[in-house]
Amino acid sequence: MTLLTTVFAAIICTIIWYKGAPKSEMKVGTLCWMYWGASLMWLIDAVFEYAELGAEFFAPAPIDMLNDFYLGLSVVALGLIIWLIILLVKDPKGVVKEALFKKK
Image (tube, rainbow, N blue to C red):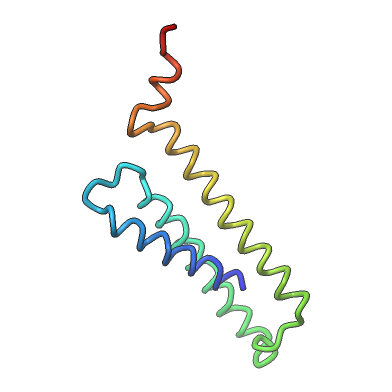
């Protein structure tokens, strides 16, 4: 479930990035790289877990699937938080800078 969650997040993020690719003001490409990296990590984890468990890998307990789904959502949320921090620091549209140095 962690692999599926991060792959879906990566696909959605890549589609959003591709629609606005020439401009790329919102640094969505960075978010795509994070999600594709997480997907690759979970894929390697799945390969090694399959090598260890064999056929049992394809019949997980429902509670294990739920825990994996929550872990996948946590990874997606952490990626969004990191992306927001990068976006606020880089401030591509100058919104934060304008708000901080706004004279009354």
